[in-house]
Length: 111
Image (cartoon, rainbow, N blue to C red; front, side, top):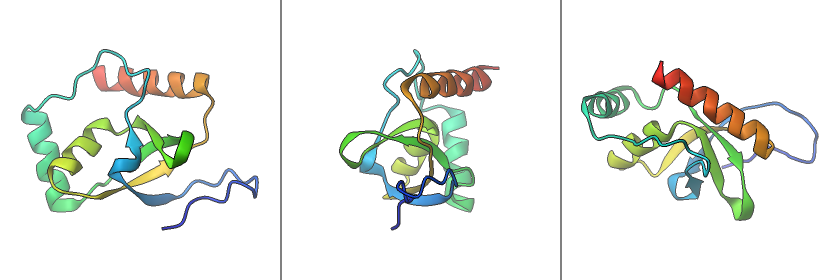
């Protein structure tokens, strides 16, 4: 597995696979529960059939871990299916930018 070259100064994003145990939920996650409901069942069914079609968006945090900005449900569904790795896009975001991004994703999912 290769990780983005942070020394090059390039903002080029790419999809890589990261072990699920290196992912952490977004610490500023709004009061939002991942439910084991019909939508989760359908998501698991889709992932089982087609794989994860939309990569999770994560940001690097301390000690080689990544905080999930978008994709909490996909991570949960993949975990239930026995996935050990998931595709992610790593974005280097400030604390404020990550909060704004997460709130935007959360609002889209509520709409």
